[in-house]
Image 1 (cartoon, rainbow, N blue to C red):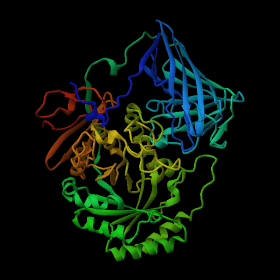
Image 2 (image 1 turned 90 degrees about the vertical axis):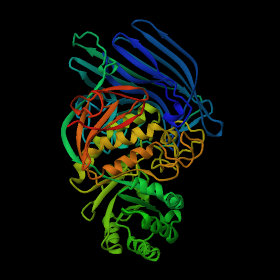
Image 3 (image 1 turned 60 degrees about the horizontal axis):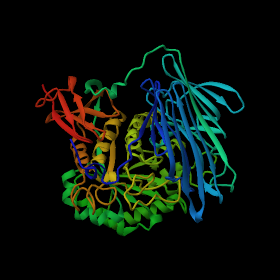
Image 4 (image 1 turned 135 degrees about the vertical axis):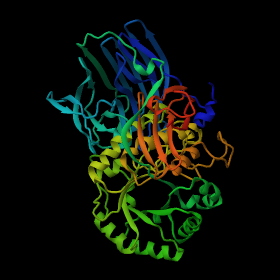
Length: 620
């Protein structure tokens, strides 16, 4: 089946397919000069080895690659190229790269030189270990002073770096096969990238405790090398991974059950008029909750609240107000002023999610925490100013910030945070892989806050705020770039599949509410100009949000997929009966064997189109 790329991704820009390189049992994908999906005997050893350059806002440069040469034989491959990054004020950075692979060894070396000097937050290697099958497993870390430490990859997500002063790390890939990753040229440390919903542990160069941004001096070469050494005592013969066998992906009913969460929609003052104009579409979706964003520091006041009140009047469900409290004066004064404005606007939300505005900015390791009133004082002021209204706390930003600044929950009726899948990487594969990290995030929240009512969102592919720099990235060309405030895939079928996959991955969390979109604007469900859907029409994401809203309160039962990175599913049961909900997370057709989840009006096997979702009645 051939489907227009524009319909799938919201852009006609096509990702360059990776080049598959092999040396015996070792396989790697070469993409944009870096290595992805490094496998040994069909099993993923490393998710990536990349040489990355970050700007002062932690944006990632896309180097121009020249003189690319690839040599491939049966048991060896070699790649060489030059990469160039153009920085501000006519500065530039030239990187000379050589990659060599053999059956039991992979070496990636780079020499960077800045003819004019170069400002950067990070310049060097990032090595990604996968999380599925690795989280909680043993590892051995060699430190720069030669000390050997027996440890484990974190299971519950670590807020700070689990390993520092690293020279090498070794783990078991499969029985009888161990992989050592050695880093030379600088001091490395590891962070738990599941904090940002990346599906990896990241070992990176230049400790965060050192100053950043920093200046690379002119004409002084910086050399680094990463080596992967495989020690195989298993005696196994080569095999093909199951996912590549071409067979059907099998679904089986599982034992876990629960209740579907309520669905929310985020509304900002800037989109309030557009939302009111589209009230018929809002009624069609019928979300259980509208989440109104209010930021006095951005000039929001009584008029914004009056618009919210008008929208709440035509909405049949509940409403919540998320407040970015300025904290320029005492919390009691600021919350009392907002309460006065709410009264003037005749708007009484059912819940308030309150967080200091300054907590939207991340505080990385080694940085000074910004001035902020004690959170207990903020929550007490909120209870006093908004009597009889549920008060929630947490972060208006991401789980990262909640994990690093764990809010006291004694006065809170619920906790909340968001996620974003394009913080560090924005290629299609990396975005979909972030779904793997969501169960680790929700389990980590439950480890901190127990059975406290728990909400997530708004969580969208485009980034609404950047806690790690001064701005989100503009994206007028509709490319795939990290930290972008607009992302073309939000407008295509990719987002429809991503959102359903997201909802499936967080089912176990017992969420009170899940918010995955706005109604209008770049985070919304209504199409703008130059999109796959006619302007003013329903983006494909509309279908997922409407479906999930209709399922709120229904019971769910897990379906176990033999390849959850490609196909996810669950069964929902309500008064209308039981239906199998299934989603293809890939840009290619997938054959699905429904197994014990067999639909009533279909055969045992389904053929799912790229990024397709389906809801099928189950047989009795």
